[in-house]
Length: 169
Image (cartoon, rainbow, N blue to C red; front, side):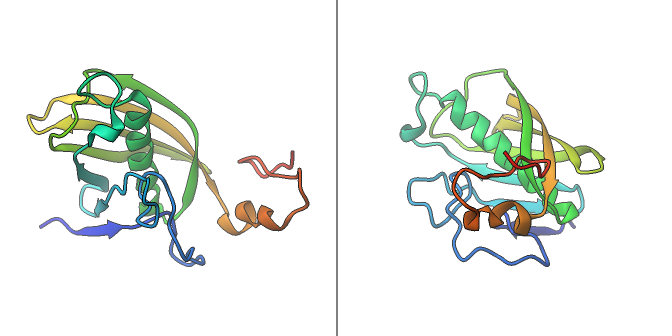
């Protein structure tokens, strides 16, 4: 029997959790967000989310905007990093839009890890309809970060920020 656990937000075990989750993709504290709810399947090591898209995510008539499709795929791939207990930010992402993604019908996004090389995590995801047809797929490179260091910049002087590799700009 598959073990599933709910995956809320972007917090990782052993690090301080933010009080609120305003993430556009999965944040339950963002009333304008998508509020996607993911589960992690421990047996298959997949992140899974079942969802329907409302008209507010319209691109072409009756179908989802490409940016929304990208958001869903990115969110799914990002959740996969929880299997390794890391917070990793999107470094790059390639998307294949295979078929229009319809609004108002049951859809599923699944994601899994392809490879890991140091801080670089390569993950893949796909959105399917209830017939099992792949509508869109993606491959992304995620860079593991230390959230305490990366997001401590809120206390830095104005104009100083960090890149994903830790250098200051």
